Length: 434
Image (cartoon, rainbow, N blue to C red; front, side, top):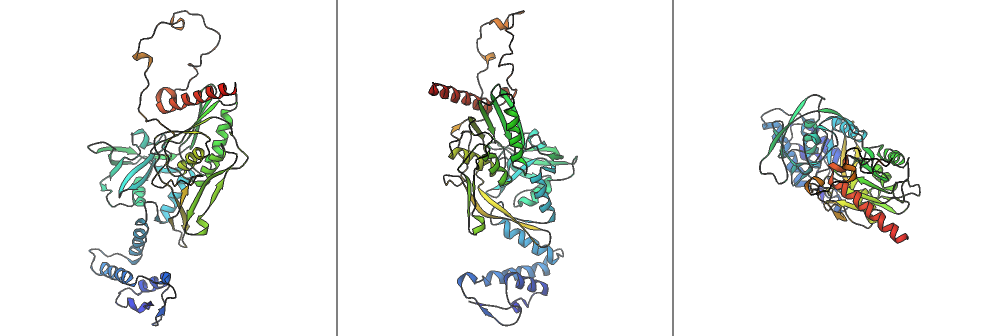
């Protein structure tokens, strides 16, 4: 099909637009037409003509004067935002924000956001941040940011509005899942320094490893935490908590999965281009190859967190417990531009070792445990008096296991159930060995 020359844009008032479009899409700048050699090279001439007409009318008739650079950047933003919720045009500030988030320090409220059916939603609040303390939850809808409605708002615009100087305030209008009416919350921005790894002993022999997101050093931090948990004695079981983990750096997720696997595939990606097809496998250098493992996930577990859960589940390395994960299984590649800005472009999809796509499906737990269920406490039932209850009773010279239990077990039902499952697995293992 013949391709018109740049003279096609002769009706435009701004000649630079014709020059830019000619350079970008490879049109000749002479008056001679060229013929495409394959169907793949054919250009949608009618749509490009419509674009030029829209550009001209905005320049001529819009209520305020808008410069060419702003219009073209807005066009690029729209071009990317309409592809999927995660592709985006990154100006210099957005590029810097992305780098800050992977390094673990930025000014804001501590929230990961996404788009679902055109609506801005909470993917997850980050641990120990204003968003978490105010009670925001995964899949809450964000209707307004201060006085700005979020309908039609892009992800990057929302991020820009939420981030700001520590100490400044922001007002969000939130509609929680299942709520009938929105609520308004006011949060004070902080310097968010996210520690991605936390660990503790739940009770003697059983450890807890919490990963809140995957940053550049998360793999090393997880290895250090596992070493500390094993200092006194080898662990009899470990709870790996990936709840409300929005993901992050792919290599960090591979490193964490590798800490528990000594061989086999961890994750692979499939895309159109050869360099988007990658495979990541476990190495023989494994920190905790034999520790019984329960992995906790929920609706806020996304992307890299789903990679880890899916790999350990497919490799039968541990039991996945909790609720279904978010289902963000796409790969975004950061492509720098010559002007210091860049593109965040979806180039591939993640697949678990058994070939399951994570995208829009998520990871289903082996054992479903819904947060909020309650144990029957001893205070709610009849309990007889025991020797330990008598005033002045003799001790046995040993601290009880109950006294050594983590406070986390009294506050978090799912962690308690994960510990119970680990104990049950150990009982069965000992019986089978006997």
